[in-house]
Image (cartoon, rainbow, N blue to C red):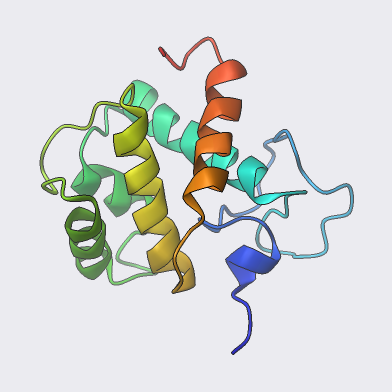
Amino acid sequence: MSTSRGIRNCNPLNIRRNETKWQGLRQEQTDSAFFQFVSMPYGYRAAIKTLVTYYNKYGLKTIREIVSRWAPPSENHTENYIDIVAERTGILSDAEIDICDADAMVAIVSAMSFVENGEEANENEIRQGYLLARVSSLTFPI
């Protein structure tokens, strides 16, 4: 079985390339569509920072709202994605998420990584990414 693009790129939630200068980017970006990070924790950091931005800037506070923006129906089976994340986390799709709850955030990112890559995420790498995001941001209220 081949390794998924998200895993190869250390970008487990498949963040598309844009003008953002993320911490932990590989010096050479050889994937024309998606960012490539030096390690999985930096890929998870970027994903978590993006979810925090969705929460704080855009008011997206539920799995349904977050996934609908992350994986829009024009490109994905969004309802299926929402259902899988809700089921794997045990969080109702329309329940408000507490972004200060590390366990909830790790569970959500783990479930999203599973949908994106088709394999279980390494929880320790997600927690490292969560800590990197927390330490580096004044807008992450934890």
